[in-house]
Length: 157
Image (cartoon, rainbow, N blue to C red; front, side):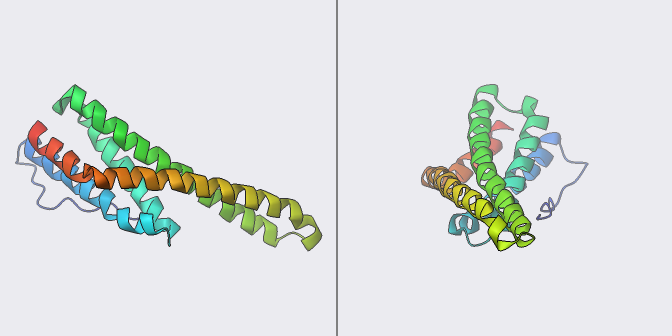
């Protein structure tokens, strides 16, 4: 799991508004820095890093929810939650498929047929979950969501 990005120039003598602005923008940049790698799908850990970063971002929003417009925050929180759900669905399949592969290595070949069927079923389900994730990421990219989110943070504080 990727370590959270450091918040640069965070100064406790600055106002809450200034500090929150730096924290939220850093978490937005961190989350969407993994977008390209997640879309490529070559490394399952990149997807995991994006999911963890998105959850960190959502936590910041929830902790400081009183600093934002309720209506606009609700919209961004819902979109972020949809992204987290899509990432989570694929990640859970990845973890389960890895567990099945490890389990299968300890079985006799004759006993592994059922596991092979389960792996095939889960792989198919993962493909569908990944398609849903790609739709979500393409929508976010097309609508320039990261920029919109950053603008929301800047104007709300």
